[in-house]
Image (cartoon, rainbow, N blue to C red):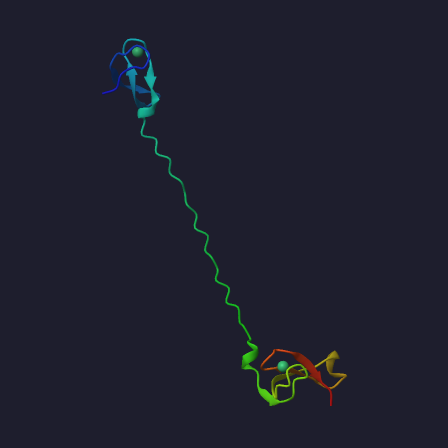
Length: 107
Ligand SMILES: [Zn+2]
Ligand SMILES: [Zn+2]
């Protein structure tokens, strides 16, 4: 049971502006807190796109016999890159399997 905070009388159900509230019959106080106004929040779920990064791992590269100048390792990954739209020959790159040192190989 609710009581009027102003005069202490019992609040009675009343309809104000088409809303069911409790109001004081003595002083006219209207308790608006009893209205069942539920705040509904529209939760928008952002669809997170999982970007699949295609990792071309160096460890997938072929291995050739080449001596690393840094650690004297005898094997290295290799791949070739075409430079300047075919004007020049392919440049062969080597990457040490041990210390990951990368160098060019000139023919
Ligand atoms: Zn009152
Ligand atoms: Zn090395």
